[in-house]
Amino acid sequence: MPDMKPILAFSLLTAACVAASADGFREGQWEISTTMDLPGMPKLPEGVQLPPGVKLPTRNAGFTATQCLTRERAAPAANRSDLKCETVRQTFTGNTYEWTTHCIGTDGAVVDGDGKAIYSGDAMTSVFRMHGNDRGHPVDVTMNSTGKYLGACPN
Image 1 (cartoon, one colour):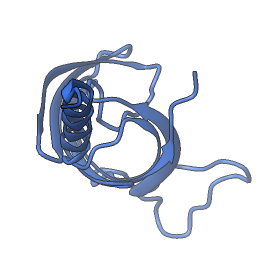
Image 2: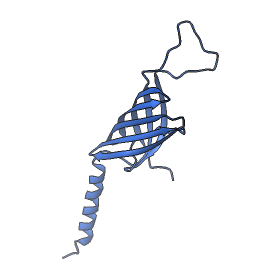
Image 3: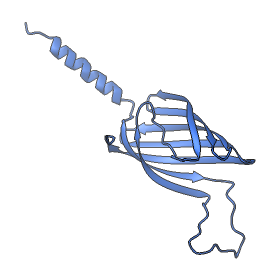
Image 4: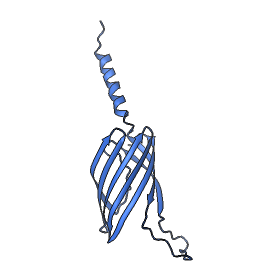
C-alpha cells in the first residue's frame, strides 16, 4: 500500500487555504476610493467668488489611494500627518471587518471613529463615521469607500 501521508498532508493544506480565503478578504494592494460627507462645511455667500486658484473643501469631498491591507490592518486608512490615530478595537467575522479608532490631532482635535468593511473577493465596501471635537467645533464626518484588489503588496 502506498504511503498516504503526503496525500493527506496536501489535502489538509489545500483545505486550510480554501478556508482561509472563504471569508472573502484578500491580503494585498487595494485601490480605495472614498467620498466624505461633511455636513458642517460652510458655503460661500451668494455672489461671493474665491480668487483664482483658491479652493474650499466641498461637502462631499473625495479621494482615491492605494493601500496594502493585511488581516491585522484591513481598514482603509486616511493618511493624515496632523492626526495620530490608534486602533482600539478590531474584529473579523466572516467577510466583515469592524474597527474603532481614537485620534488626537496636532492642533488639539480629539476624534473617535467606528468603521465596517465588507470584503467579497476582489471588491470591498466600507463606511467609517468619525465624531469628536476640533478646537471647540464638533466633528461629524462619514466616509464611504469602495475598493478593488490590485494584487500582492509591493516589497
